[in-house]
Length: 625
Image 1: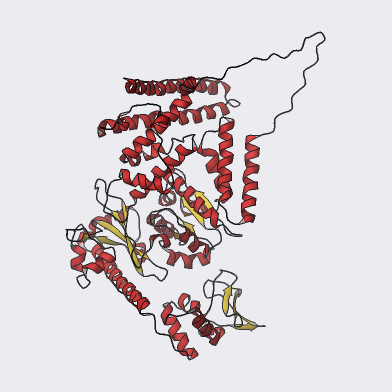
Image 2 (image 1 turned 180 degrees about the vertical axis):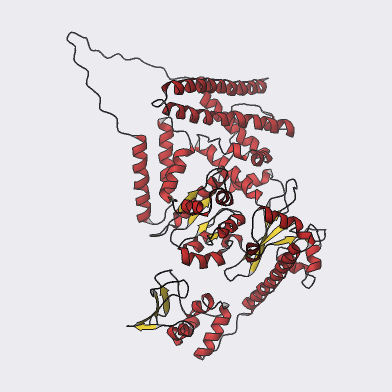
């Protein structure tokens, strides 16, 4: 049978916890408890307590907490089963025989750990060999010290499709495939997943190698910069955080966990004395990963790059965290200056600047307000009502009723102050004797459907619908024009959701880990849209426009060219409007200069709208003929 909860409870009841801990830590009796200086962090005043009646230890300084088994695994570094066996022998209990199926699974995992350990040793040897010269040169350019190379276990995978099978010939090829070191293609010999890459081991909480991440060194077209191991019996990328085994210990000193975007960010922070950094596996932060870091600290710091991809990653992490919020647990959001990653900032401004930035993170509610307020233009009452709807949508995902109501009130208070600012008092006009007062009213006729379709806003909406259909048909353009598309900001919520989904699938493919550098396909886009319950615009909403990228027999070069041209036109309008708003805001300080800038931008805006409508009209006429 397996180790049941009842059996483990019996084991704990037969063990005197203070006796187990007292073998390596000096305890002092105080009432019903024992006290000591915490063995998990440096302190001068004892804050570590042991309670034999309740069967647990706790440190009020660093938060370390657990029972006798946890003490053996965390403080003495023993594997779980070794700890159980040692305590069982002390308690005079027989360890039950494991379930055969569980034993087989454990044996399989153990053998895969052996494979990964052997692969790691081989990668490290390669880095030190003449073949690893290019990888060593890259590490030198990045300023990574010899100590960091040893600490993080850097290695090198040679550019050879059959090298690892030869090097690890003691293991079968099926085992190497299951470990993710070989790729199995039907009808062909398995070949190396990692080739010509700087290698980093990914380790579990016990420090065992369970996967690898590889950075490409040569300039190979269409090859992903970073490649991770696929999921395996020992590796689940959604439940694993890079460097967690080191960061957990460091967090007890700093009372902080910092989540960054990539491996090299973690290593840069460690080099600057901040060893409490972790990173997800090239994907958005998952619910399981959030749970892992919340067990260590109540308010982890999420530190993302200032570019559009980093901001989208931050917003996705916030969306995942909201349903899980509980009293005392939240997130702090730090955004780096645009164009800089942690390594760049540390090199430019020093470790103190990075530490200061991490200490000044936004609260979760501040970040939600900023993201949604800046997401779309807010010129009309409809725009502002859309902002309110988006804010309420966020609060409705929060499961805890108290936190949900507090978030709703806070965000709606901010919305009210923004949408309905206090007006200055008006002076009443002096009454003039003998002046007639009358009410002039004019009756206006509503514009026809045809006129509404000809407005710049309607034309822009139809072109965005056409563009989304074209991007789904030629998804390579999404990746190539991702930065530009991130600035599009459709005013229609449905269009915005479609665009965000397309950008996400393109970004995820950039970090593809389970296949060998495959281009983004139409089916990938269709799958994620279907998964989210989204549908592409129909022909009626496009309004009869006939672009090459909508043709049933498109020529890819012409279609791509027209897609890029449409993106350029559509992205220009928000940029002009932002610049106009900035020029208007400068009127009080520089009226003459602000007026000249405003007139120039208005002229550009009119020219943009003329070009946009001309392009739409040309295509509509082409459709009619």
